[in-house]
Length: 196
Image (tube, rainbow, N blue to C red):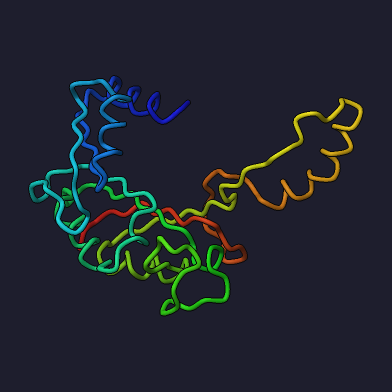
């Protein structure tokens, strides 16, 4: 199921309202066209100053945002402020060890749009300062595109697939899995509860 199908299913099944916030008016305009449902509200906002009331949200999702912000403590404090004390924050970020290998927390990330990236251990420590329960998952499959020649005769296709299959298998599954200390993950996702 695509993201809009998932969102509409959740809204229909749960009869809940949802709010989407993005710093970009263009992103909000796209969302307004894509999700036509009176239970979904969209607004331009900033993670450093979320325009919502204290403890007003039961669930907050924040995917691949924290690494774009220099003031990460202020950002997490704002998320905690608007989260219901019994609520859940689901937050994800790229793993610096996968996206900027060999770099420390003080080094600029390889992605010039990122201000600061976390390792898995640093992300868990960061979140644990604000939450009593942090359940962490890893996603090993980086978002990569696979390009195949368009005019590959069928008899050559199996040979091409034989050569690239080992690379695809090394990329790993894009699904979330429980964190293992023996693996590095491309993305780290955490479900956080029990606000401190």
